[in-house]
Image (cartoon, rainbow over all chains, first blue to last red; front, side, top):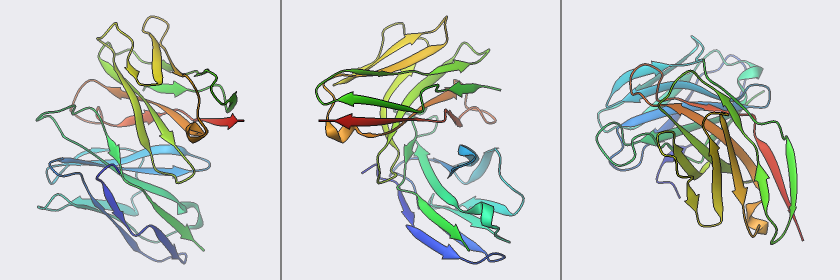
Length: 116
Length: 118
């Protein structure tokens, strides 16, 4: 158990709909990362938040957005869903610059999204 | 941009034997980190081992060790005394050394599926 939690584990929804994925980082971790794992694209970085602020953006679609709240949990919002958005979405967390091994990322169990 | 290449889509090893998974990467940076993650059928991503580029000594974690060749940009994973529980997808990942912009992101290879047979 990495200490990173994600809900829900599975999500089935229809095209055009909007969903929210939730992530709670390990206790004390300030950075949250979102990754998408799909069959055709592999594992891709979407976005990073550090202590409530957006730090970096990767290959994230405009239909997708995220935020990190004061309690450090994060949400990834996916809207106008398409069949191609079906994937496993991972959240990862790291300590940030403050201490430990800030360069290590620990992953949650993922949310499997199926768009029908 | 950095790239990570895993040229072995699948590997097989007998229980108790040793197997080596290959990974090469391309970067112009001198400060970076390399990782191996394991993804079993449960789909959880588990950090297996890490290597800091500034360290010459190869990292070791129990039965897992790496062969880090910085000049050749090669980072292979050796699993000794393979166990049935080692069967999984293994991903090699690269992280830049900085903390600004997209430096903290992980760039993954396409993975190697390891089968462990009796």
